[in-house]
Image (tube, rainbow, N blue to C red):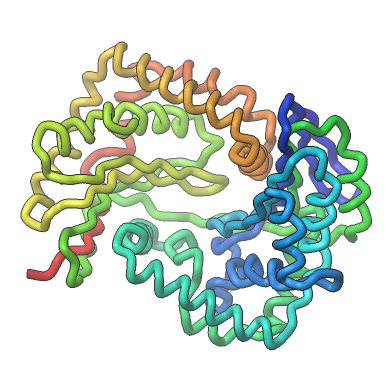
Length: 401
């Protein structure tokens, strides 16, 4: 991996490898965590608008120039990043670069299209609200966090999206879509990034984006939030506030997540589904970023099984205080294997690069497996005691009788 910083502050990271494809990802260090109350959802709306035409291309031309070559173009908004990527055969690298640079630099923000796209975003909000598997995480984070903006949904609220104007979007775009707040990663069969430097080098540096430090209170007791719906089963999350990615304890939590939730061989899947048949879908999700982290177990089950499932989760966390060397070793080999497989996927690896560069340095990727392998039994026991005790949040979308 080679890193470059242009005079305007733009960071470029190249990961050259033998491949017939190349991925270009542009990651802007802004997401829902950066929004003021009246702006909830604006990062997501701007993500949509960058596909809706530029000074040089219509919406159809943006998509067609990539897709007619067999390529893929997409984007996503998270709590602290908005990223756009193009995956394309390497011989068409220049075309992919021209399209994504045009999207980032020259969005049209046509007023009629803004009003149309706001309706599309509201439909997307409705989709999340209607889908219990998605919405349970919104419910969970809303209860888990008291002050940190992660408690707000990434997509915002229908009322704030409806109220957004063209001037609002342009002001937010001009504040955050600046080169010194961007990362460009290039992964695959490309030997030079001279054209990447040229494509983005003319962007003007903006004012530094400052992140407000949030003092989130520790949770000392168990809390519960329940929403009743007409569903065929109940959707559960049991979880905790943890630590940001830069902390060594985050790697310990990765190992714990692998012990409990690595597919069909994870301890929770075995105890809840294989042995008892209490659920179809069981898993563990550990998300950690620049200034937050959380750990959650999710289960789809019948209402009558919720308390049984909760007890099984608590029991398995308690058993980790006597975790075996074999369990830790298998968790580490699982994580390393997944890392190797993901490195072969140019799209995933381009995003990993942007994620770690946003955290602090893309080269942290090079020491990730070393940090995982440094985790010891004593670390697991200490972290379970410190973070994964009785101070959980139980979020339930409960089926109505």
